[in-house]
Length: 244
Image 1: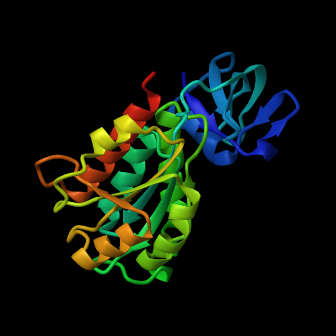
Image 2: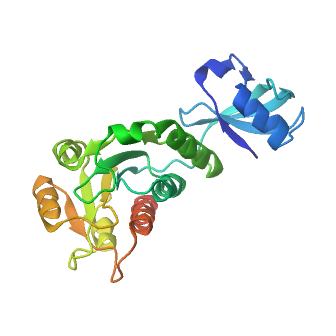
């Protein structure tokens, strides 16, 4: 069943008035008909089973039949702090980590990041938010992950450890602390994971992060590309967090 995030303004009592963009998707792309049912999401974690009552590419409407809580949101709140890199790779990480279950993202500027100024990426935020929203719809999420403002590496060290009970920094030169073993011993509700850029973190950056409260961990014996490391780390956090 197709899923659509809508704004609160689009919900009026028991009726949904879809935006022009969503209406075109319903009518032209998906070619849905009156009487068909879709799931409407108001970004509160609820699912609204809705029957389409009018289908037109200029404006579709629907009648809410049932409201229930989305069962697919993870208990663990995972913040992914992603080193800024090439647009395609960064967007892929946003998409896949959303599918896995990440709750929020912070683009971070490190010493080896390809982008060095936050202002250089703010123009991309509308596109990135759309990518996250569509990934959340596709993967059955009930909430759209937050995309927070880009930050410098040093600023994240000052703010994140105070807000998250476990902060991890995967590093290729860490060989003792395995992320799987660490997560299996403790299952905090709020976890932050910082992923370095293509060139990795410098030794000095890892030392600074460790002093600030981040735990260096290994993801295994093989060296992973940053986009692979992001998804592997997110998947391991979600797996351990959802185990009984």
